[in-house]
Length: 136
Length: 251
Image 1 (cartoon, helix red, strand yellow):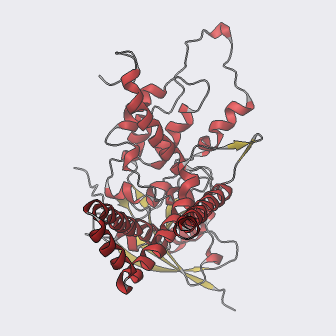
Image 2 (tube, each protein chain N blue to C red; image 1 turned 180 degrees about the horizontal axis):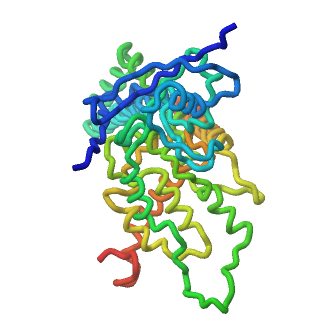
Image 3 (spheres, each protein chain N blue to C red; image 1 turned 30 degrees about the vertical axis):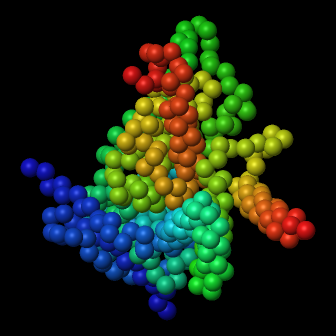
């Protein structure tokens, strides 16, 4: 008879064992706020379809203090989600070469973050123009 | 004058007497150049001959002495006491069953290695008198990184998905699979695709990325796994355009 009795360690609470796992879980957790914001936008579209009164009520709700606070939290969470998303990006892309040399992971992360920043500023600028200058 | 001593705690598991693993503390003479492996061998040779561990080369190339050092996967030969002034806690590699003390059951890992067909499946059969297969340095550079794997298992101990689903092929074996897929002499990608797509395959990965952080040989298994997610998705959509019966197609 075999004396073997392999011991399998439990996995309960695995994500608390290493700071790396905690950071991963926080990253995954912030996706919840991305979902919340998607719901918020969807509510806006539905209100728009219902007519002017519903749309104005939606806008008034967005301007209220609780919603401003909630959206500030959502913005912070999405910024963190975006940052950690670009941090892992080099691990998920096929190797990229530029002039025969492999592009470093840190460069890919920096380019991704830069592109996200430029896109955000552009979008903000366009909306700003449409809502102020464009309305004149 | 007595020499400086260092505390080494080891998670012991002796199946004939322990129902669950238990911590045991040892005091070993400290020196700046003492590796964890040297400390463990001091314990085994001078303090307690019943301690079991795997080791061989002492120079981070055989891949035998993988274990958890203060909760992180590491090669004992490449980890030094001087970096842990508060003392060290050594435990068998996480996510593997413990056979005894620091020795884990590697059978499942060996099965996974076989499953990925880690050998060149020639694109075209070649007779001996046709000479060797030729490859340019650029072609070799594509896969060289993944050929650095020493099968130490640290990436498995870093992967929570392996712990939660022990059937997952896992980072190391998929890195090896990718190494052969990228080889210009190899024609086995379609054969290996079935495994990539399967329940055991790449979609068990949730991109934690710790596997690549802990690799002692600078392999990037997370990249191999995630690049193959794209390959799998491409295979799924393009298989409808392939002639029926072609290798790797949906049947």
